[in-house]
Image 1 (cartoon, rainbow, N blue to C red):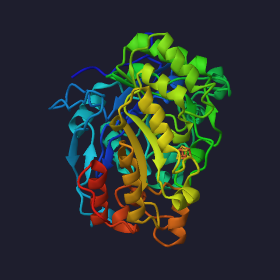
Image 2: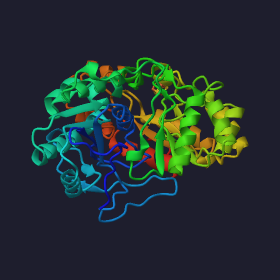
Image 3: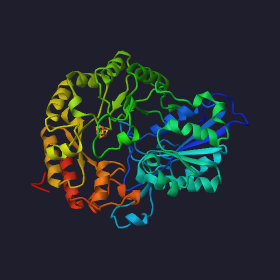
Image 4: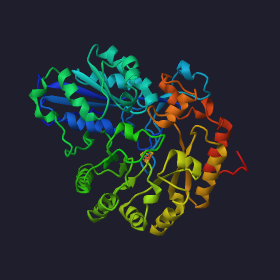
Length: 465
Ligand code: SF4
């Protein structure tokens, strides 16, 4: 078994405080490594490294490159692939859903071995992304208690930010921190028994740009990068504003400096942009970055799984994307149904996709290389509306990709489900899982969804669904 890296450059000192950062398992009906990396925790590690007399250790339950795995998971050419998994009993609230439920990531035995091998931590930090993945946090903290005892455990991340009360009551963490990573710093410092006056490194100013600390990832083949935080738009199903109330772009020259340094240091094959709004202010931001990627010879593949705003794609950006090595483009069309777009998302329109496709194919992309996200499962959405959108995408030769709606707490769509009695404010977050809409509240039944999936995949289109 390989050693989990420590990453302070000084020698370990007896009185140094030891912090263990853990990326927990995913408990879900389905999960796939769609370039999934713990970006929030990599930012946190970067901040922790600023603290004096602190050693940081990292344990990633979703590490597909762990040498202790009984079978090496498959890795596609583009860096994606399945997680190892083990079926687990379904929690009571979802016991009637006719799908298997699994823990995705390292086997529990490997996690325990890693915990035993690492030095005893003074503090454990756990992050969690989706609200309905909280059983992974519970499982990690349970095992921490069994193996280590009463070490303080701090929970942060998107789940803790969106549902802090639930996290306080159910996660098992001693402290729940809402908000971005920098908010956790002074709390961590105090728990470690240091006074805030002991370090000026705790202050993060608005123009202080810090970056994810990749050295803790065992495999650096796929590196996540973010050039901005948040989004200036207000789609009714999206929590971007709640998580980052102020849209902020890092200066293009800082982004490119960081990309080049990471490329030279780690030689990744893939960079994955996690931005919510990569193309905003495109002339001064992404176009500058793309030109520099080309000029500096950064020869990696680039991916955009979070989806690009279709109407921002112009001739120049399409050419720059292609020349810079952007592959597997994902465009956020969401729907061709004007009523849905008017209600939920002003970022797209039915007229936006044809010119974008035209620019991209002229730049050298094959139509089938272009993936177009279409939302399915919105409250009151009809299967026919999704079907027509799929056919519009196929007419242009692109690949329709169904993006399943999940009611994220705090969004208008979540409120709507509560007002219409389909969810309760205090419903178990497991009911926010994106797999559940056909079983719980949608007009799109499981059978209709299956037909839509087959249509999107290219199987024979049915006359209606
Ligand atoms: S454009 Fe994307 S990130 Fe921005 S609010 Fe809409 S869904 Fe969220």
